[in-house]
Length: 424
Image 1 (cartoon, rainbow, N blue to C red):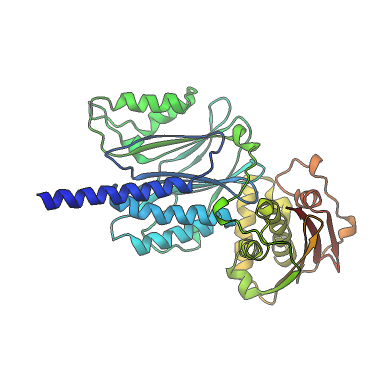
Image 2 (cartoon, one colour):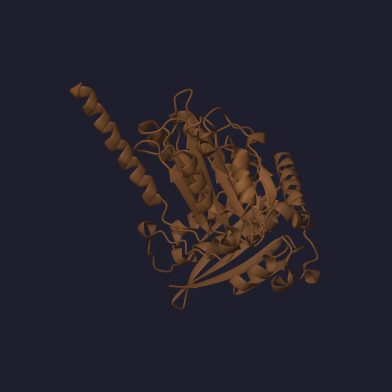
């Protein structure tokens, strides 16, 4: 008996240590994002994680592990490491989902898995990408409390099977100021009253349609289960789009900063079609850049510049996709489906990236050149005005003009050049 109690005490201590590590990873408090959690036992099998993306916008993960205590803690740690690490480096939602699934398949014994919903809000705060694998319907309500979007689970939970291309597909929905996003774990839906009645999805939606915010909804759930034995952890998440739209995170990791003095260096990449099919260029290039010359306080801006330049080279130059497709949520989905299709069939193409750095005044000058194998375009006739463009696409060039001291095209329109100056 004493030995059993000692083992249990050790398990609790290990689980507590792991959950404390996970909490320390979540260093960002995002405005407009709130969560209510009711824990069954000492440790929670539900997860809520959120972090800003280096190009702007945010990523959110809501997870529900089968099991709690030590098994949930052991599995939650690699999920947190992948989510926070890959979000910080700028990887897309599909890459994050795929890597989390791989980690859980490696770690979890058969029969244990994680139902999850991952959400990506793009930098303008107007489009949500959502992946729901095993959680109740995610709901988007307008300012009059009407349900304008419903995203049911369309994927199996993480940690069950290897992911294929279709398993990584996300749903796109448009949002605007005044909208709110609600997501919960099935512990809320399945919570039982003293009459053995489940709270249910219908009651959640009725309360939301009546204008109930997180506090009222969670209060109704807590009242429903009073004087009953709780059977599962419960989590409800609310995201206020208006509050998050103007959020501007300073992505600085104090523990990983390196202070190299500005130096002269140059590096060149030549990515073939085989590499382009498999590799997300921007996170890799940016993180190499951060290791060579580390103006960390400029990382978000440099990431945005490279993301725009490389994205234009791949999507418009090599894959010949039209930005105008992304003017609606359906267009977003069609755009990325066509992108995946053309990328999978890509042959005899390339993207070349040249990075040159030199000391400049009190900081440095980063000179970027991106060339693609596409047909180019008539850049002399191509002008965009960011201030007057309210569409969901086409703002890239104006943004580059704002962030860079110089930005231009040359060749047949398949070469873009930028100069980014930073000060220490």
